[in-house]
Image 1 (cartoon, one colour):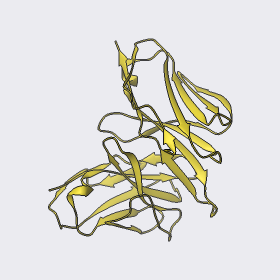
Image 2: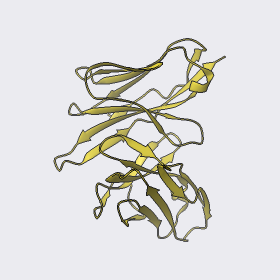
Image 3: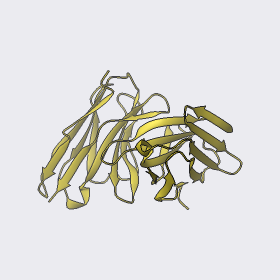
Image 4: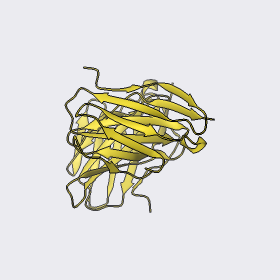
Length: 110
Length: 114
């Protein structure tokens, strides 16, 4: 089992560009999450999906959109990247309580 | 008041000593508690879960929960240099809709000195 996988691992964008971060899990978990982690700020929840077909905003959703494509896949889209979105992005899944994280995507917006 | 608070550290302990990491939380309705280990440049890894008051042991790790005082701790016995990492406390509560919300602390950096 691969657990939670994320692509890409690294990405550099120019301000205003768009991109989609991909996440997939093979643990048959119902819930999936997107976090960002910045120095001194800890993990902050961007969006979550409690089950296939549902998505909800987390603590810092502005500038992001998500799609729960199916039970396995949960993608995060940046429509118009800004330097403030420079961060490390983690996807996680859980069923029901314990969360398991992907390896992360390091995004730099110049 | 932050929902989950941890001392950022660094906490330095000599090899072989006991490392004690602490976490306090604000929501008395919290039901589940987790400790994650995060090595520099890596993702968080779940190492302990605890759901009821008291101690839970797993190898060199012991999680302690005191709901009355609203704190949870992690003890690492016989600390090794490989334990050097940031330890994140996470607390889980259910909202009225049944959705579980997990809030993470900012983490305590542990340094084990050989």
